[in-house]
Image (tube, rainbow, N blue to C red; front, side):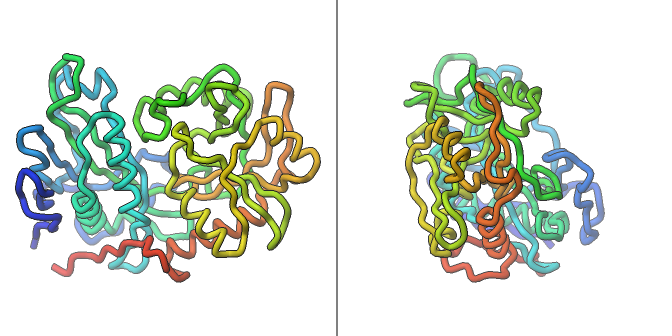
Length: 381
């Protein structure tokens, strides 16, 4: 039996219902899907996707849960030519055979809306965003892998789908939600990563799109990431575009610096100045750290201070965070004047403590006083 998943009345001004469109799937319903352990991040996708259309005349309409399949687009699609496209990334975690928990979908809906505003795209209403999430997770629940570091990664993308090449915002857009099973972004073994400082490239400038999760930010980072990889690094460190001395973030992850040890440890993270992506995991870790009694300060961090404070032993740990990698320690930094080590070069205890606290919320093993986990149950019919 199939039923609509309600997101609101179907009108030009309210979000439409998400309706299941039957079609062939790769594996019979009810059978556990592969966990994609041997696949690279984002290579093996679930059986279904959600698509929703928007036009300036009709608003949001035609919300459909359907089999995963190629999209039919004109070669003149605006999103292909002018990059009018934004996306998100968040996760669903298995609780039982018939229940999953999606982590902070409303926060991701709000961030997608903010990104859409910056790129002159229509905002996806939060009820529609959540209804699409529920529909896909419920339908493809058997794809959610088991295990502490495993989850179902959800990827919504909103792009201009109108076929025209005039230099104006599109009047037709498409919202697509797909998913894939995943483990830890840096592999199953916990390790501290090596990062390289970007010397010749910048990620974002004041007044630009640094705070938006848009495709161009990532395409523009590929060259620096490749150069970092040739130097033996896992990720690139971005500096500010004006003075080229203030640490901003890693490629796709926010940064935290740990001063001191144990219960007296203090955390420092660069502030959200409009050039840094406001990470949902970053926000959660700030809350969890303060709940654990740790002091957290949002303040600028200079690159030379990072190096000097590591050499003096004042910085004991550095870790990055994001949806894909959760909490990942930084063990070594490659700078223009040579490399340096953070702490003893291994994952630190504060990062481990916060990672465990976050995972406990994900898995339902700890209290969720902030209502971050959104439950989704398998359709009983």
